[in-house]
Image (tube, rainbow, N blue to C red):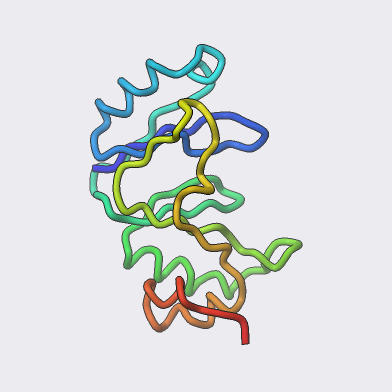
Length: 135
């Protein structure tokens, strides 16, 4: 199982990631009132850490390695955003907690901004995405 807390901010963000929904709910209870009341625990029972988390116009979705490969390969069928970025892909190697509870620290997670050259490298496997570079 993977469980995460989605919280508000200038943009929505994932405030923490756990391998147990109960732990996520206990952590949510410790957040400041204004954040806790606008946050939600989400979970996916058929997935475990390590895995991936994609952030795109639809929000956040945790994905298995196979799902991530298919997702990235399918990006070529649509247009990227204004800066040439389709989505942000985070690698979740284990549970994640911010240094300051309730603060958006997603930038600390290993991540890549998926661009056309990543889509082109998708056939080489998800691991290759982290080493892909523009031609």
